[in-house]
Length: 128
Image (cartoon, rainbow, N blue to C red; front, side, top):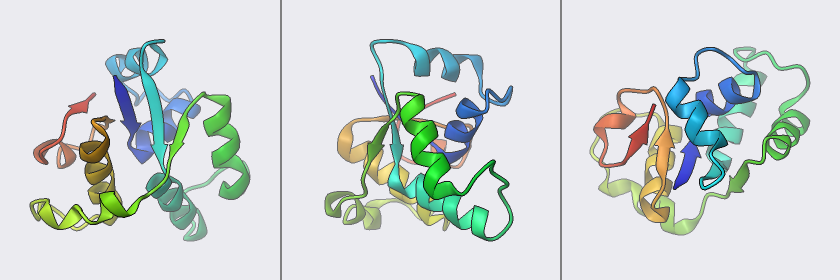
């Protein structure tokens, strides 16, 4: 299974936060699964850090790639094919990062690891 981590799932995974569900944690460590982080999540982390809303032990341009690589998580770039699909999504909310994740998951046959109930209302498979 190809798993696409929502931003909070990635942050909780790398910090071993109890907020990450047992099912999500098991799926992430399962050897048969591929685990991905979208460039959109790295972008969201950088924005929240710059606004003072997300404290990190070091600046995101060093921290995110180092922790992603250390955790064995692959980077999923944002491509033209994904962003050109966003107009097909129902207008459930206006969070552009979540909408990109949904489009990427649909384009690449991925399951989004998230506890966000709004993402679960999109036509996409989720796991939590």
